[in-house]
Length: 123
Image 1 (cartoon, rainbow, N blue to C red):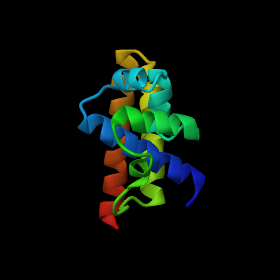
Image 2: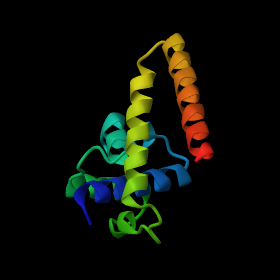
Image 3: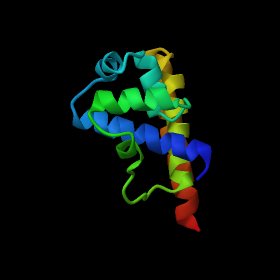
């Protein structure tokens, strides 16, 4: 399993367990004696988590470290994971822009997708 994929899977598993417990990233960070921004980076698969931190997060979630690697049936392909990463990049770029910029980007994307849909429906 490629490293980036593993980071994404572990991060997604941590997020799933955290949300099932009804914890925010801030609350999990406090329990794990970490920063909420670090937890967010781990959940997005953007940060390589150390074994010590993995143990702290597992303890904070009340699960074993092994449970953090219990992905069940993995249905996401690498392309789906890459798509989620790209969407996350777009989301982070949009967050720093004004409402007007975001609305403009939305209209541009709608026009682009309508053009793409029309192009492929004619063939």
